[in-house]
Length: 215
Image (cartoon, rainbow, N blue to C red):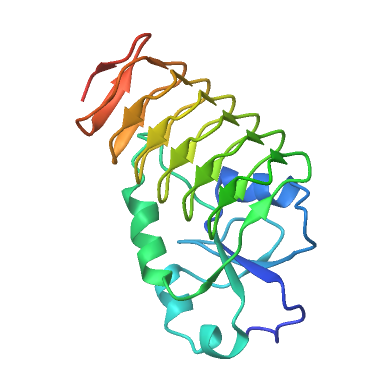
């Protein structure tokens, strides 16, 4: 039986992979308590209570009486496909989504951070919009008037220059550089270390410097 909720800001992680471990190591600006996690199977290296798989968890009356915060601690697989994550988010729409921002991140006052986001260590967000359920990973820089859509991942060390527009369900790999004013359509994957100099108007997978479509 699941223990009674102890704190109003207690969080349940959905997912138990590498991003879950990163979240446990970060120091968020607000005091939070990671209560447990939901995953297809128990992760022996995750020091939290296991609440079963997604179906088991959602069919209990737990969400009705405890009203915990949910945070999606899984990103894409190795392919960069964000559709599985989007599907899970849609199943939990209506739950209270926790936004986690590292103490070491710099987020200017004129920036907007949506619900369910994770802003990791040493990130800089300067007057940008980050859509709901998106992740900005370690050391990424998102400059003025950028707009990041729903459920989009920005990888470690990526640099988005001013006025970049990234759509929904995108995966921007580690070390990607995106030139000022570039627009990237939803459901796009940009491979690690790529350079984007022009708009991407067709969903797909792009790699290289400058990028070209491979899938």
